[in-house]
Image (cartoon, rainbow, N blue to C red; front, side, top):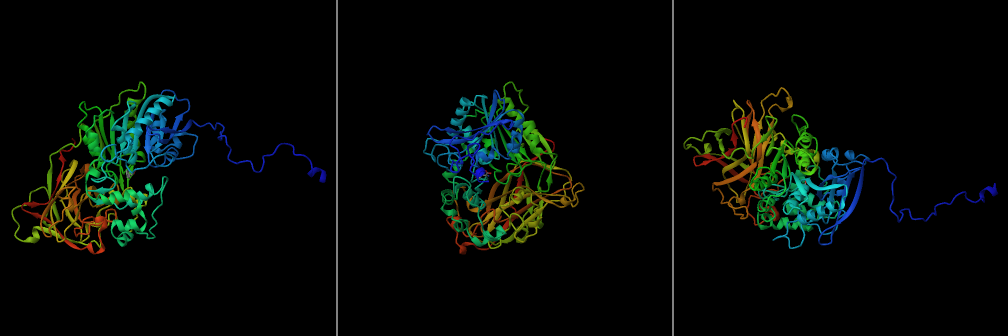
Length: 629
Ligand code: PG9
């Protein structure tokens, strides 16, 4: 009735225009979470504040802290899942810290996501390339200083961990470490962007970086994805032309870091001065460090070994510096390590390492009263033999045994005999055509699809061994296992009818025709150590020089480290080719001042010859060690 409608309201109602986001911060009731999250802006010495997410186990007291400094969004890195349980919420690789009561800290590096300041890609240390007062060493120092003074639940001890870029920021902190930084585990760290990590390998540019640069530097947050409109990245990159033409299509050429890369195609002071192995090798070793890398690390397969080698010289007591190599992809240490592509291991090798090796190492230095860990100088998962090995040093040998490339597509350890009469027995040739480059994985190439990209280094190389532009040499079946533990050296005598050339050399384990335990591996060609070298740098990495057409020249470069047993009944294969596309930009095969700006007319077919004649014995020098060492 009317009187009912007019009745006064029983209780006060919220005004329709009351702000729906209140001025006082929202306080959720306790949901039984086993952690407390503190989000703070930590001031650096120049006044810039860095966004830091600190997850503290409830009830923590005298807990150690583990810090990662990231360009990949600290908020997201601290929350894999929405959960009241710290173990479910944090990253898979953080499992051990949670189980052991650690405080976990993620911080956005300056200029990214929630942090203030300017972003500079892999910001160099203060010095010739950085005239500011700050770098990642000072930012780590200031952060650790703040953490130990402001986190009441901590015991004042900090460890740093992180993979790839986050591994790079761990190494940077070691350049001038805060006294509270007690242990460090850089994983798959980017160390030298030119020699063999993310941007180049021996001068050949990795085209997939253009998309990475857009994603990282177009905005402070997450930048745009590249929409090519072509399913096959091979097809798209080929149509695009040079790497600068590719970049132009998406405006990536306007981004500052792209400009820096295009301005420094050679190993000049820009790259040399920021190579972290050089930097760390010239400073005292103060913090116990465990360098970790994946055997098939498709992004940073060079740097972790280089950083270990440079700092190992400083470890006079042989107690501070360690190397761990697992059978993993890039950053695979933080995920399931039971298999990689078709290759299976003895269990979850990554979880085993984190639980049995890394955590005891951190505990020793960070947890009050923890026992000394039994950490070997080097821990290596020996592939082929499929076994973890505790080693005293790396590499196991410096003695190299040449494996000769011979006429008839053969490969063996005997030095080629006296002069061969006819020229066809002296060299093998192929036509390298930049219009039909050799793909790095079978087409269609889906370079930006993680499921394809992550295991690509274990791709079956059979798809390439029969191409007319790939030379393939193969040994007899091995009558006894053959172990290599170190870096194979390429020693190639080769010529081209062009004036520049790339050389890709692959050391491959050919499985027997049948593999009873895993039939699909019958005849598999597994890449053990593979890399590319840009011929113009043969006489100096900082000195590009044209190749004289048809002149035989020597190309010498190291392949990535391997600790592998070629088992009895397997064969050894070497493949040689002159493109690896579209991962690496094409060499136009005509010498131009800067390959980034090569014009369509510069890309020309050339005939390449690989020699196996007296005085020109092309070989792969192998670090062979007696089995079982
Ligand atoms: N490999 C990536 C990267 C590191 C440093 C610079 C550029 C890229 C990464 O996974 O973080």
